[in-house]
Length: 224
Length: 268
Image (cartoon, rainbow over all chains, first blue to last red; front, side, top):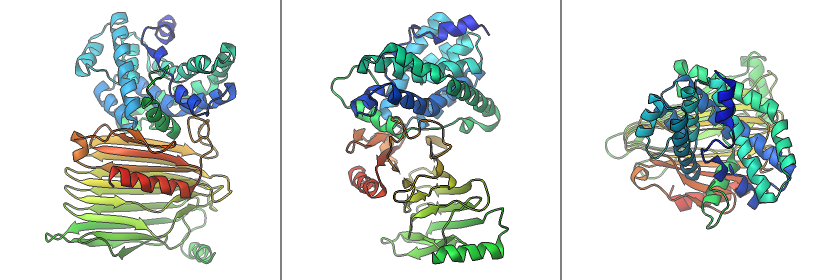
């Protein structure tokens, strides 16, 4: 594995469309549940340990070579919100385009033709990591970090939050990120023996409810 | 407190103090071919007593009777409910399930296994599960739904009794339809749960959480439209022949109201 390759994949400027999504932060801000840096920290912590962990485990499993279609089905079952499934597939499709251009592989091609409208983003991310020669921990780290960097960046725009404060929130989450990435990779390693049920299914009720509320808005800054 | 005292006595008599109690209930309904569902299996024990009650015409209806306060720490309770081909089974409970701290250290386990065979119908709607302060309970609910079968599953979880801090509760709900995974969802809350569970992404101070899962063959072709039910509940189509209502509320009473309303909206 190459640390430089990991930086390319994890770069917020990697052209995979993530900047258009707030990870539920826009709905939480509108509902008054996130009003500043302290709320953002708790929001990110909650998201990291739920949908972040699930995404990291899916990505790690894909990086290990688990059948991506099986993982895509596992992702569907772990994403009860229709709005979030739509967002995950849209993001997966954009990630697929970027990944095929960056690290072309037969496995990416196969998934792209099996899921022309997009597979779940963490599955594509994991397969992209695999194509780039990265390992399951790398994929888990990228997915886990994305689960919090997206909301943090969005809240800077939504609340005019000081970007220094938002970055400090992310920095303080580093121990949690380490733990989530390690747990995710460990779960992914159990998949060959135990099947995809070994992957976590953690959920955050207000993320699921907020996603449906947000999808019904006529005008919004972020796609999800 | 009578039930609690009886329970402690029962423990002393029949169960080593540090292992907790094991109890199982088994319910199986079968259609008799003339439109009537019978209950060839109806067994319970200890805190999981079962009783046949009057149901709708042709339907078998069973109540789980809270014979003792359970589960306590270390206990392991299992309920199996099956509706055989074409059968109609409705399972409810007479009282809330109260998770309490127990003498043995370690979590209590409550496992629910539901099976809805071909063209059968199962309604699973017990009273609330209340997670008392100091308790640690792990719930798993697994439902297998066969071809043409219908499932209504309703769960209400309340964190802490009135004015009390919550216990530790993890609950994993898995629904499979004709062998294919439809829903896999885990919720962890209370002391020791991963950080942020009560923050703006998780519960944001709400103390009651509810879920309503509906599996109907026709929902595969005609999925429900996602929509809000008030500010704190949403109905969403699952990726298959089902829908899910997720709700949070400040307390059990308001949760009950929003889920009752949801049943009306989605046609439970």
